[in-house]
Amino acid sequence: MKTARGRHSASRAERRPHRAGPTLRLRARALVLAAASTLLAVVLATTAAGGTYALLNSSAATPSATVSSGTATMMVSALTLPAAPLYPGLVIAAAVTVTNTGDVPLTVTRSSLIAPTAASTLSNSLTIGLAVVANTAGCTSAVAPSSKGTFANAPSTAVGLTLAKAQSGTVCVLVALPVDAPSLSQSSSAANFAVVLTGVQA
Image 1 (cartoon, one colour):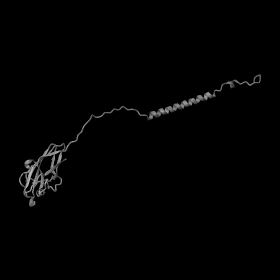
Image 2: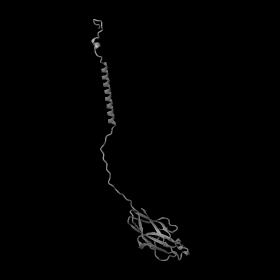
Image 3: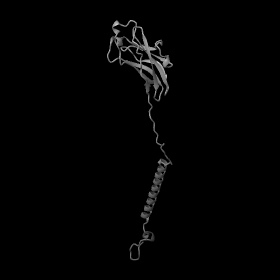
Image 4: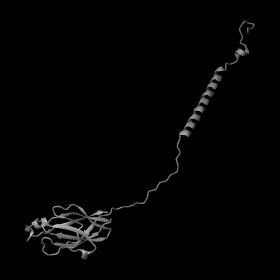
């Protein structure tokens, strides 16, 4: 629009301030806030879905306890043989009492024979037999041994006796000189020999 002096005068519309910039900035800020809100919602949802919760709990220990092992032990009374002199074919007998002094039942075996400290023709000829009898009076030379051996050959063998805890039993020990013993066995002796009995948990 031209004035009287020929100058161009801006119209009212042209003189109106340009407000497009602030409007765009407001829209951009709104979009950023909306995006941030969406991201926050996603983060919260993810945290809630993958989180853990502390459950109430309690624990307690048992009072102190103690256990102990038992024993397998037994006692054998002294073996006292008759003083009668041996000759070929003679059998002498003496009883021993075996007592279970441990905590478990025991099966009794003859594990070995210990030879005299000084070997002789007599000791090499002897046979040692064992038999279980009801009592000491039942141990005689007429009893048939359930097992027998020599000092040179006495493999471990069962006696045929099982003892409960604190129970006792009687074993008859039979010492014999065979009828075919060599003549050099006469006028000889066999001292300090032993029968080894072993108790194994039944």
